[in-house]
Image (cartoon, rainbow, N blue to C red):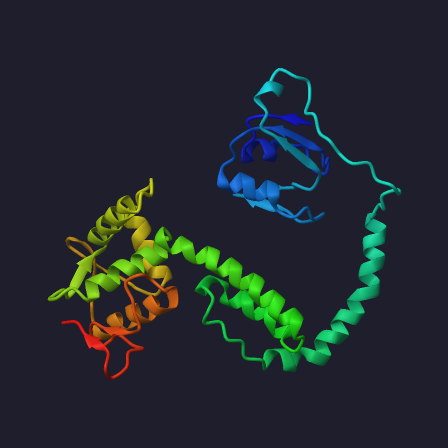
Length: 279
């Protein structure tokens, strides 16, 4: 199937279970479409777009050659296979599953308590990956080289994600409210004021987007900070418990405005007795 100007709507319109080979001549893809097209090709796994289920299984080839726009296809060079390619049918998959499933269940029953009792140090990883890290490392924590290989690969992914804290809304909120905590005489703030500060920060970081007060308020609730409705809008009072929660979030999200070596207030943790006090 020859395609140009592809988007998720186009993918959703393809007949289900057809699994065509997609020959795509397009130079630019948005982030979500690129992720869908480049995900590992797995039969029986689907991608959801709203209430629509996308079956993206099948071969695909890409080209961004403008000279091919008036041609009748894409020119693709594929090395010939020396031997016949194996075909994995649905019946083959079912036979493999019947063979392995009882073994996997027995392995789970024999090792469940050992795996659940393992403590995995996830402090080097970004918060959103920590549950995944435990899931990956706990079952193989006694496997030496394999554990180290998986750990390093996951750590590489974590460091890539950590760079996103410059524009991630949760990190931006925690970074900004932490600054407000350290601002003298600040006892409360409004969600609208917080959104304005975040938009200024996004502009300074050359991010071509803005956030609304509604988005900020919703994300505040997601991270456990709840503003109260008053006449002027939604207000958050910086009580001792709220300040403590904000500082803990700052450490968890590794925001730029936190430094364990420096104590700016009595809620700043991680500092030694000789840490510099900034009043």
